[in-house]
Length: 515
Ligand code: KIV
Ligand code: ZN
Image 1: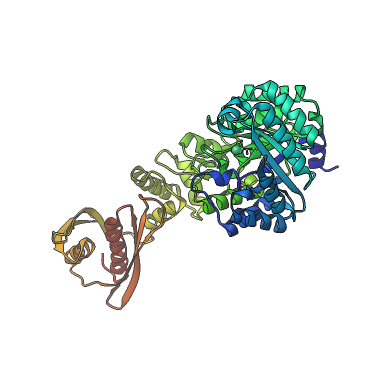
Image 2 (image 1 turned 135 degrees about the horizontal axis):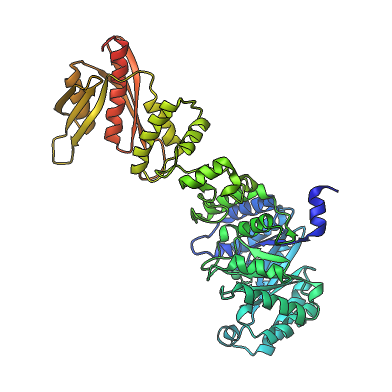
């Protein structure tokens, strides 16, 4: 037997029920159109979730049409549609999933006193009968019927025992316990699951499921605790999106089960390398950004910032990393360079960028890196590359920038004061005006050198991201019959422009034999 099969034969399978297209779509502002829903469903099939809850077909003709298309076109997972415990909803759900390879109808009805008394305004025994009738009716269309006693965590346990016994007898094949308002805490939720298994006859014939909301930030913890107490299906959503604070995040549950196999003797059939792609797709289409610190799929989930951590990671990844990003199809751990990063991390990043440096060169770059890192919150690899290219120029500069001040504004005449320094320590200062601060600075430099340099082109690029992005300026300059490219980078675009000009000027002067 293969290692994976051996492992699985010991462990029990957990069914992952994805409700991104139903509860997830209930996130304010997350509405998806027809094509987007199908695109997400196809990706969920690639991710190999067991069940896709594709929507709530009674809610609109467009929803019905989209769930129907998913049922017809998306193969692999069970396709499920939601219905209240009334015939009209069940008819719509049945119509929506009828072409699925494996159709499921999911029926729900309030079970707490609050829901029964205030929302449904019916007596518990009347509602119990309604639930039973609804399950029987749904079974006319499919053998796979899930029943959810809505708001179960605030319901009376005795009532749940009787209700669930009856809906199982009526033909429910999956019983799902929703923590609809995210009220439960792990130990309490686990013991509810355990007592339902103990006190509801017929529980051994069905799959017990949980559906946790995240109002107290406990959705994933509650779901995992439920598994320990006998649940075998978890309802969850990509990126944890969903009504209010969202639902349990699918990726967090799957990865927790995988990483802590020693604690959770279960497995899922999820195609892990598709996790990252699915997360990005859902975020893009729902227009809900993934928080940077989100477990498993956040931008920072695999980024190491402190110098001590970076040093540890370079010595052995396991010092500060329990998940390998490639498990979820993400990029390998990133050193996120900041002013706290040490030489080891900077040198490692430079090596990865293809620079092989002497220790002196490294020291030079590291000093400049610290200066820039103090100004920028974060240094991206592109920043470091730009910095290294800027400072490892093969020509020793004739002039370096010692001081720069510019004036600009809608009511002032653009002007610049520049002081340049030569290797021998001599300094040269000039003031000039121009069409703007950059033009003024270039004119001031020309006054210092006394040369008439042609500026053939000027280009600026943000080489990195964010408001404190590093600007890279590239200028094409010519003098006599020679023309060269000068480059400069800085978080200040005027400074970057002056550096680029000086870089070009120095090259031109060297080529022309100036000293
Ligand atoms: O949160 C909830 O109770 C639900 C049900 C429909 C399962 O979403
Ligand atoms: Zn829900």
